[in-house]
View 1 (cartoon, rainbow, N blue to C red):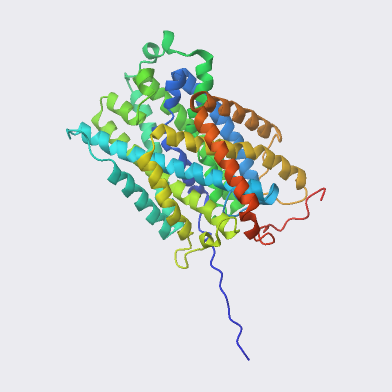
View 2: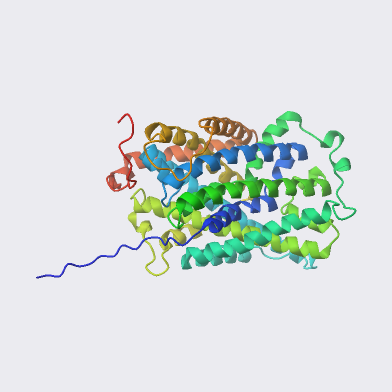
Length: 464
């Protein structure tokens, strides 16, 4: 008798807890406090940037509430892609998967650009004439973090937890040192925010600043990518995501307060590393060194989380044959989607080495906005097809459908804000997604394993 051959299927390892989810979400986004958000100041002034920060905070609170409910129920790699696959349909899932990959890969490229800019700034301050070549540092940062992700998710996100905590502490220390709590402080809000400087472009500037206001929080939805690797999705995902949004709201407000009190809005609106510049203007050498370390750690933590999230989305699409199945492989030793990690490295390098920072930031924001616009439809269909009494949820977000309606309205405002400054990029990206949708519909969908892609043990949807 022939012996039956035993086949072992290697899957992702469930080793993460709530702190790792927090570190993943905050780690990706905290770099938004160190760079990028200040372009909102250039669009409408310092007060416009503050209003954009709070409006974006409301938008991302809705995102976190919706994500926490759906992801704690659909606990699988791929995040919003997997949600769309089960709730809306294959074409939407394919597009959402691409939104995720592009948002995180562009954010990773922006972080690498910032690492190079920071090294160049420090070299110039140290007396190095003409600065240094930024490209080796850009390449080294992406390659090192890709290697770390290749080696295992627990080490990757533990590393993120440590450096994210240090970067957040640096923001708090800068605020406590400069705000005058323990004595006279250098902040000059009354001088820098008076008269024409308050709202230099009026309320249209406030609307335009919404574009970069999203950068304060962009990427917090990446916590959903850890759904298949947490020990308790029902507990870890809602706690880590919602705690992350609260952490970022605090850090964003403190960042604005310090930077707006130290720099004129004309300079702040174009600074490459605003928090580091604020530390330089504080007059404390030790504080400048600490914020330099915080900026480096924030960019590394964000790029690290982006590699983690983009590779999980790409891996999930490969596993379902939405992309070639070759990408759906898991490393037999490290239990990571190693092929997806390696494949996305050169794409990030191309944009990091060849595109301006504001353009890369805009591409990331646009992909994120398209993803957020899908979420209201997703949660409404989810509640309609599987009401609360039909399947067990790890978390039930309150006030439904108000968060979905608020999110949809704020997304519309943000699209208009992007159109005011980057209309060509907006049209080009939407055209790109239309073309790849046609490719998927007429060619790629024939290879999808349609029966194996629905993995949740749910009853038949209501009305079907």
